Image: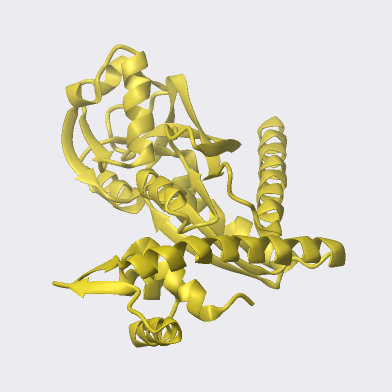
Length: 308
């Protein structure tokens, strides 16, 4: 394994925070501080300036960070190439996923993945789509899965599957008996929206714009930070919303919500996003390949169910 002190130093230097580094590395903050102190003693110089609860790299720290990054990348590449020869798939895989994907799509996929690759230690970071893109940009995760377009041209984006968004309302709502909902019918309804930065919100805003309505033109009465809170508010009769069909399976079975397709239909891609130039560990490649296979099976099963 690459020198643990370098790994810890590299994480602290990248995040410029001992606390965030400890969370990322699943270590205690004193343990992180001890590793940095050992490295500073080895070089007999300070690597960080600490002032007013903020840290910054010294000139020596900048130099160590430059080489630490190269060493860690080379070590990861060596480790992966050797494991290709032995057929071994193991190591730490850090995945970032937007809220909807993490809560409703990944649990089943990761469960199957761990059965096939028990030696891969999967760690999951959850945020909205914008937050996940930032984690990828900062090299805090190996691969992100997001539900909105990615504008950073330095990142690679690879569609893994498509998701339908549907209109939801309580069973007693005046529109609950309809077969579908048109964009025009949304205009005067009390609408419950996800927060700024949410991939779902961005996709809905773009969909409405393409169909002649701006999101701000709706009767936006509340904003929420998760699909669960949106669903609970709709069940309570506080308004209507648009959510991923993948999020409402339980409520549809219980009869607490009604989901209606939109016309025009609203679909969005769930996409992998990763550093274009960054060397990818074999565990990342195997996970992406596995995710594609998993989703192809889900699509085939849904088609078979519809045919029945």
